[in-house]
Amino acid sequence: MAKKVEISVEEKLRALFDLQLIDSRIDQIRSIRGELPLEVEDLENEIEGLNKRLESFENEIKESEDGIKFEENSISTSKENHKKYEGDLKKVRNNREYNAIVKEQEFQELEIKLSEKKISQYKEIIENKTVVLDEQKNKIKDRKSHLKAKNSELGEILKETDKEEKTLLSKSKEFEKKIEDKLIDAYKRIRSNVRNGLAVVPIERNASGGSYFTIPPQVQMEIASRQKIITDEYSGRILVDPKLAEEEMDKMKSIFEKCSTKLTKDELNSIREALPEMFKTGWGATR
Image 1 (cartoon, one colour):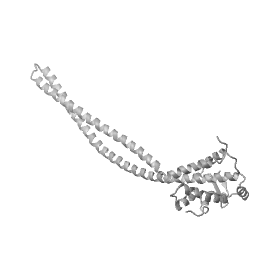
Image 2 (image 1 turned 30 degrees about the vertical axis):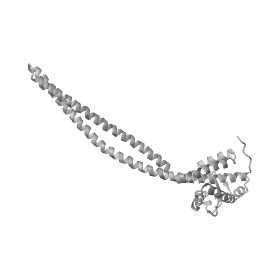
Image 3 (image 1 turned 90 degrees about the horizontal axis):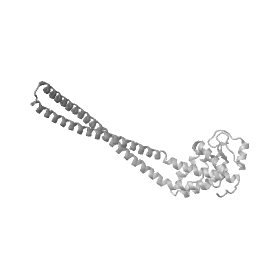
Image 4 (image 1 turned 180 degrees about the vertical axis):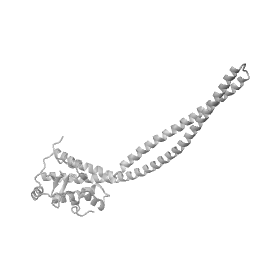
């Protein structure tokens, strides 16, 4: 692995602030997509669940239909047996045989009634499940239509931002290479622990960007001297002086313009506004 060229503290601060601007723009691009990817995933999972329920209802209907066929066959068998016993009654020789055959006939009649009751129950199940099945199919159709719209919306956003995001991710890695690993690790750690992912901020109104805690004049002078990396004791963010921030934002504006040919004035301004309020007066003209 190639050894990183040693650079001055000021160059490190500039590289860190440039990296922050790039990463903040990437964050903003991802926020444009917002909850859409999650909404699409949720809809896909919901449709999958609905299809499983649909399959379950269809299986219940099929089981009921098979049950009806089975009971109809049972009724047919019982009727045949009953008819056979009717003939046997004409051949009886005593009361014992007669009573035995009559009992068999009564048993077949009970079997027929039981089967008819089961058929009635199966038909009721089919009727109820068919209503639910139709509702389920309509719900799936509605969710699929909604999913199609969300996918289309997400596709349009990805189409407009994917190229820019990939370019900026490449730029982010490029700028990371200019900074020592230990400092990059600290930068990433701070980014993951603070609001809006802002690890490097300028001083504004004698305080750290986004903070109300005043920074002592002596510390501000040290920050402005750019001789060492100084962090805010309250938020842990790396601090840079306003002039450095102004210069780097003007420089990075051209990079953002190159990354997206569709970037409008409002979008460029929104990049600035994605950072704290202290950047609002510091970007200069936009195209």
